[in-house]
Image 1 (cartoon, protein in one colour):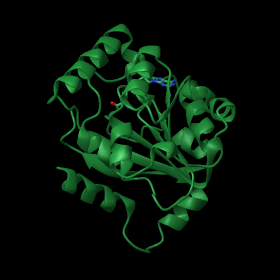
Image 2 (cartoon, rainbow, N blue to C red; image 1 turned 180 degrees about the vertical axis):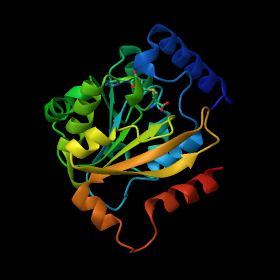
Image 3 (cartoon, helix red, strand yellow; image 1 turned 180 degrees about the horizontal axis):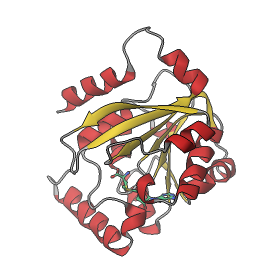
Image 4 (cartoon, rainbow, N blue to C red; image 1 turned 30 degrees about the vertical axis):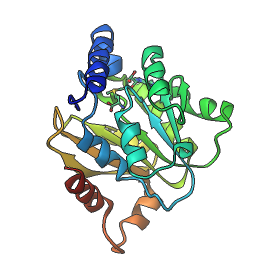
Length: 222
Ligand SMILES: C[S@@+](CC[C@H](N)C(=O)[O-])C[C@H]1O[C@@H](n2cnc3c(N)ncnc32)[C@H](O)[C@@H]1O
């Protein structure tokens, strides 16, 4: 959560208001803090080609971190179902494409918007409060739009993987916790999922693991 400036405070109050109306769909009382947003952004391979899809934009803190990490506006597409949040984020980032729609229909949303290659899906959807069937659909749709080496990045406030073992196994995914973010309210962790084949390759001991990168980013931005 970033209280600081009046604009942040206004956004946080708006967020709380949306949560009061629909706690399950919003999934958090306050937006993600800067460290968490930075840790999510650190999981993206900036050298790879393709768009980055952000699911559940809210008031835009993850979007801001993606931009701060040097990802061009044109490469980010935000999907937000709630009309009020959609308006907030579109006003906050006029140069980012913000699509109003349901992440469960991701393929169609991207097709209609003419978006091709996707290298990462960054999700802050409240997967733990979404019914299993919908959660499975959202993850399956995300994997369907991702290229072979693409990553699905998701944060959680829970102690375990936010994508159940069953769903991961059925969809042929391997997940691992990339980082902990203890100074978020509440503390959170960032998970990354890839197709089994891609996860095996990226776990070869060549260079620094992505989680290390995330921790360095966090230290730098602290
Ligand atoms: C926990 S909030 C995260 C907001 C913001 N990204 C952040 O980290 O502060 C979850 C967001 O997901 C949106 N959302 C929930 N279900 C959705 C769905 N099926 N499709 C698209 N957006 C959804 C909510 O409206 C809310 O803005």
